[in-house]
Length: 170
Image (cartoon, rainbow, N blue to C red; front, top):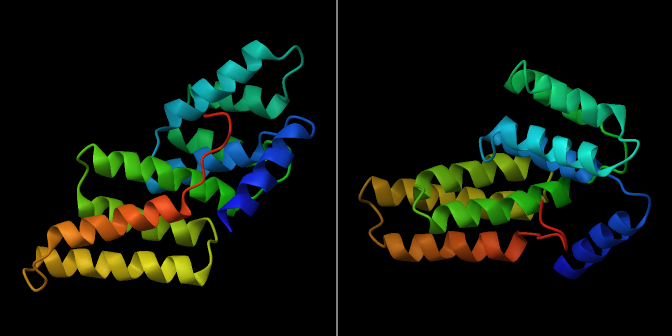
């Protein structure tokens, strides 16, 4: 299944350069708290600098950065191209895994994985899997379930299984 997602993303990337999936990556990431709005502004600035005729939506994102988070969130959906919320969400799962490996709390990562899976319209099976892990995290924190490392490994395994990393990192 992951191979199909990679092929789909790479096909989109080889068509006319489209930025909608990447814009959704930032939109979902900002909504869930995985990335800051400043990263979306930086991304737009890089594209503007590289292209001779950048899309006006990218210019709007760059300018929205001066007005803050909500203005950037409002500007991101205007980016043209084919949207695939599942791919955008799966790209962010890799970021969550990195955060977990860098010491962000197990509870925060599990909670954000559930939010992200729902928001980016992942399958019910994936949502259920992350919900189950989030429940296990709560049980560990309450002292009902004592194997913290097993729950952490389950979360890392699920994040790895479902993440999608594009050929060109954002």
